[in-house]
Image 1: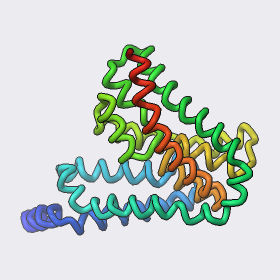
Image 2: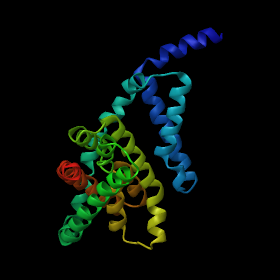
Image 3: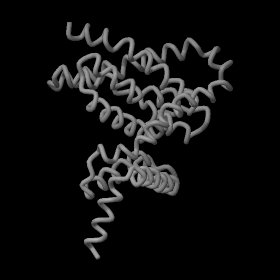
Image 4: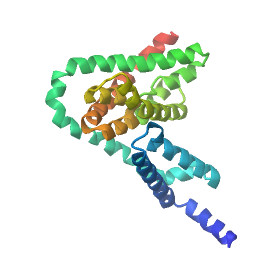
Length: 240
């Protein structure tokens, strides 16, 4: 009996549908748990899903390449989902025009802080230039961050991990931190979360409210563009 079960698992583990269903099911359960805990920060569904899926892959001795053959369908939807973030901006367009200067100043300040603090801390701890380059784009969405990392001599795979870790940390601590600082403006809360925590921070902002999520999506897009432009110059200046 156990032999048959083992053979069945080996067969199922190689089919893309298994890991697609596993990914969606685990995230759905993690999100339900997140809601039941009244959105307790450490119960973040992205964090829980990553831990559970990682453990499942380890226990089942499944290679990441095998898993990704199924998960790539979710990965493909990241593109349309990112573009769809522009839809809520239509309703905020007039207000965005009035806030253009504060938004621009916050964008530049936040982007420079994210880059310089990461690289500076890594440098002070004796990290190599490769590690520093991998850290520089940690606050932008993964595809852009990996491209930037490769262009400045970093390790794209390491950058991808750092980006996910950054997003999870922002999703966990941002809302409690805003409450501690008594920052009530949904636009400010969302913009800061999207700028520092890219897609994961944006998803958490939408859970807090539509307006917060809208500004988070705006920050995600603008920071991706700005970081792609300035990181090569900053890294060249830093190591020049």
